[in-house]
Length: 288
Image 1 (cartoon, rainbow, N blue to C red):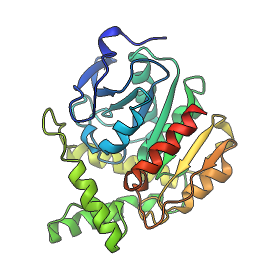
Image 2 (image 1 turned 180 degrees about the vertical axis):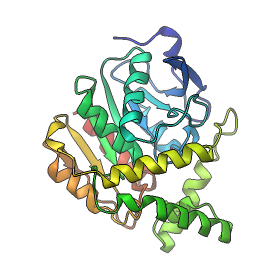
Image 3 (image 1 turned 90 degrees about the vertical axis):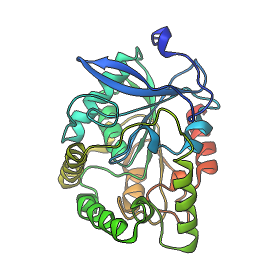
Image 4 (image 1 turned 120 degrees about the vertical axis):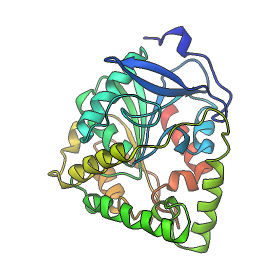
């Protein structure tokens, strides 16, 4: 099924892709589309507190050289309306409804961190909707350390305030010379888009997401055999937010899981730090 023609205008890069909206049960969801106008779209599911402008432009633009890439704001986040759900399952229902509101009945998913939790539920509950899936910096329900994300996040936010640094430097990257250099480069890339920037997440929505993540971390271990789609699993070797052992667990327990060797001296957003390698690996997987 094709999407409505007014949502299919190709865009040259993440720097100037227009922000569009589509209504889902009378709530407007903000999204941007990148890349070519044909083929199965790749839907990107974002991490905790993230809005449209938090995707690394090197990843978005790299994937969009050969794939239609759609990024969007979750309910109640950024430019999207409504109230943010406090469960991953509700976020997954929103995601499936958003995809269908665009007119698609078959997509690929790239879920980063919390987005990876959401992607797993969509693939389980809506198996015909998902062709292939990439899970990055994420883990299964009940995975070790996931219930500690709230305390770790608050601690590093306070550290950022005290040091006048962006907490993403502490949460997402290793505390090495290489990691600090990569963090600065990533934060600079996030500033490249200067027009039509998204709103930051509200405190209310941030709290709802933290509650959802904690609930996910406290759930009984998931039955990953229900996910029958091919899945590429990636992460840095030193993820503090969703410990990297969760990545290895996913690759082992998913029936059709394929592990990207963990990126060295990299943390939670290893796919951003190693964006060139990741884009090549992701496109190879999606096109195989």
